[in-house]
Length: 83
Image (cartoon, rainbow, N blue to C red; front, side):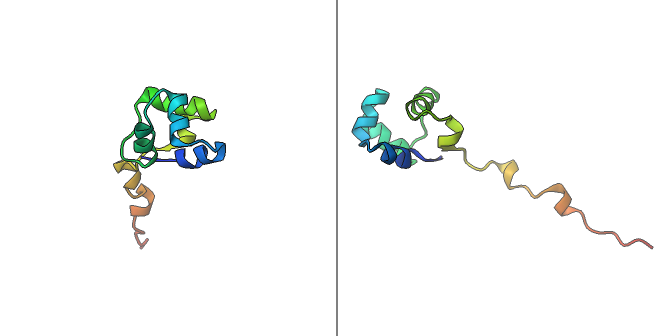
């Protein structure tokens, strides 16, 4: 899952260890979420949003779903010549 964690942390001038302390997790956990190696639990995502005073949606971008990749129904319609 893509996220803005590194950017937000840099804006606050916090190290991964400082953010980890604020969240009550390990520095390795922060690194794993920040690099996209692991997705945060729902509780951790809420905690991250709270620390940065943003919504979860503002910080994390969900992966593209199968439905998002489907072409629009209107783009599939072919013009039928009128006789």
